Structure formats: C-alpha cells, structure tokens
Amino acid sequence: MKKVGVAILGLGVVGGGTYKILSEHREQYKKSHGVDIVVESVLERSKERALSLGIEENRICSNIAEICSNPEIDIVVEVIGGIEPAKTFVLAALNSGKSVVTSNKELYCKYSHQLEKTAKKNRVGLFYEATCVGGVPVIRAMLDNLQGNNFTSIMGIINGTTNYILSKMSQSGAAYKSVLEEAKKLGYAEADPTSDVEGYDAAYKLSILSSLAFHTKIPFTEIYREGIDGIDNLDIEYGKRLGYSLKLLAIGKNEKSGIEVRVHPTFIKSDHPLAGVNDSYNAVFLTGDSVEDVMLYGRGAGALPTGSAIVGDIIYCATHPNHSYSTFNNTEKADSATKFVKNFGSAYYLRLSVQDKTGVLSKVTALLGKHSISVSQFIQESVRDDGRAPLILITHLNKEQNVMRAVSDINSTGFAKVEAVIRTI
Image (cartoon, rainbow, N blue to C red; front, side, top):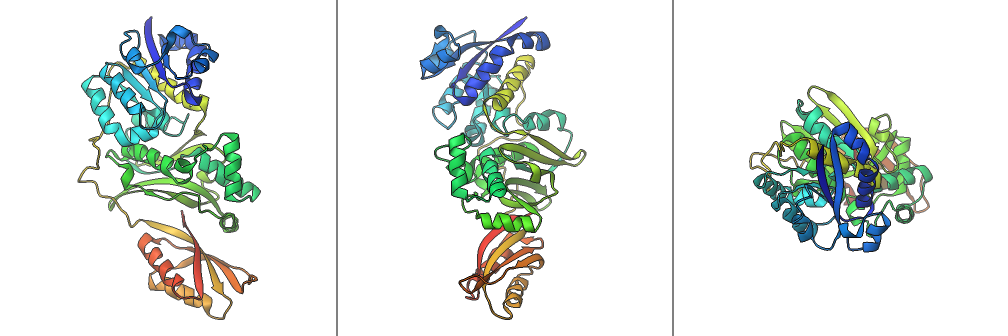
C-alpha cells in the first residue's frame, strides 16, 4: 500500500482540525483510497498545543528546514495564515520537491503566480480548495465536474463572519456594533475584524474563484470592495418591507462588455436561493452556459469543515500523480487583453431624508430622471421630530456612475439628503 507522509505547518483551529480528521480516518482512507496517510511532522511554536492533540514529541519540528529535509514527507499543509512566514515556508517546501496544500486565501490570492511557477519548476502539486468557502467544494467542482461549462457569472456569500452579523441584525434588530461584539465572543469574528467586515477576505476569495471561472487572471486590485461596517439596521428593516434580504455578496460577471468583479452589501430578493443562507453558512451560485444555475452550500469556516477541504486535497494529491495547474496565464497582473467593467449595472436602494414640503418627491424623481434613473418601488414615511421624512426608493437597473452623480446632485439641493445607498439584485 502506498504510504504518504504529511507535515502540518501550524496547529491552530484549522491545523488542529486537519490533524484530527487525518488521525481518526487513517484506517478508512486505507480501505477506501488505498493510501496510508501519516502525519510525520508538525511545525508548531507551542509544544504543549501539539502534545495536547496527541502528537509525539519527536514529530514536533521547530523550523521549516527539518520538514524540507525529511524524505518521509510528501505533502506539506500550510495553515499558518497571513503572508509571512507562510510564503517563505511554502516556497521552501515546493523547492524541496514536496507538494503543498494551503488554506491561506490572502497568500494564494496575492502570490499564486509565484507559488505555481515554483510548483511547476519542481513538478509538484499546489492545492488550494480550503482557501475559499470552507468545507464547500466549489474549486474542485469548477476544475472537474463543471469544467465543460463557460461560466457567465459567479455570485456568493463567501464570508461567514459578515453573514453571521447581517443575519443576527436582521433577526434581532440589534445594531451592528453590538452584534459584532457578540460575534467576537462566539469566535465568529477576530479581535481585529477588519479583513472580514471591510470585505477584504471576500475579495481575496473572489479573485481566486473568478480567475478559475473566467480562465483569466483577476487580480485582487481589480475588485470593487465595500464592507458592512456602515450598515444601519434601519435599512435592513426597510429592505424587508420591500421584499429583500441584505447580504455581503461577491459578484463576478463575464459579459461581452468585459468582466466585472465586486464585493459589497447587496439587497437580494427574498425568494432568491442565496437569501436563505444565514448565520455562518456560505454559498456560491454559479451560472454556466450548459448547466445553467448551480448553488453549492455549506459551512464556510471552522476546524472540521475547512479541515475537510484540506484532507480532500491531500487525498486527491496522493491519488493523482500527474499534477495540473491553472487553465490561464497565471501572472501577477491581469492579461492585457482582459477588459474590466468599472461602471457596472445594478438596481439601487436609496434612503433619503427629505423636507416635509409639497413637491419634494417630484423634485427628487426629476433629479433622478436627469440621469435616466427610474423608480420601481418606494416607501414614504411620516415626518420625524426634526421636520424631515424618510423616503426609500428602489431604482430600476442603471449604471453605477449615473446613480452616484444623481446622489451628488440630490445632496447639493438642501431639501433632500441621501443617507444610504445599497446595490440591489
């Protein structure tokens, strides 16, 4: 029986989960896949942490050189996170002739061109299913099962922290800051939640997924990004009244005019499949020219779900000796022939505060009409104590620049102010 030696770099939540799965399922993998997967070494600063997981002391390494020089190790699993020292360690492993499995979405997003070049040079594998959407096998699905399709769009809820926060705000009516603190206490949000709540994490993942879907490099820098830290619960409630759910969406489209990629809070019609994805769950909604619509749904993070994706890559690597690489020219920057659409089209939710005077609504709609923007739904509320009234509008499909110019014009009038702008699908 083929023996496959594995080293795990980092025994945090995901690394510990990966070790647990490999240890508990070792006999199963022998029977089902014909490979004996053995954790030969771990790289972990806390010896106590490693020992508490049942790892023998002689398998605990203190530096990457020990792992790279060990001939018993075939696959190195990187679950450290961040850029350094992860990047240095991964390159060292690849250069020593070992395949690498990583869950590091920031590293893979920003440096996949360098990592893949090194993997090719050394004829080893580079696997990254766990970088996107936790335990949901979206990358393998696109690379294997759905590879016969030309994808026209990819849309997803791909950050569990923001989905948990927005779900709880919607369900309880609590304000953003209080729900964020609750998410930190429960372990759904980091002490510094910037990467999640400002949309960086989702943008890293969209860069990876859209590059795969559209067979061209989509750098992180080309993605429009807006987080949820400015969301007011008032808008979530108005959205519900109009038949919408609020999600942080990652959206990629490949159309004749070019490719558009964006991450931002989005109102989705309540009957759309993504609208029912709540709490820390994730989902990716793919549209292919042959398969049409497919949605993949499941746990987007956590020790065992992400560990499941890592172990899946380990088994795939162990049982597929001929390694494959990107279907596109994986360079640092986008191909010069790839056109990106910045002035994308969308419907828009606008919440305005207007003076309580006759004719204000017609003046607002006239300013919108100046930019060819028409209204499909609206709510006009009673006057507040400050003498102004909330006016909520949903526009028909229009271009981003038109809407932003209209917002600027309205805000310069004095009789109306746009207090919230949320894109809508």
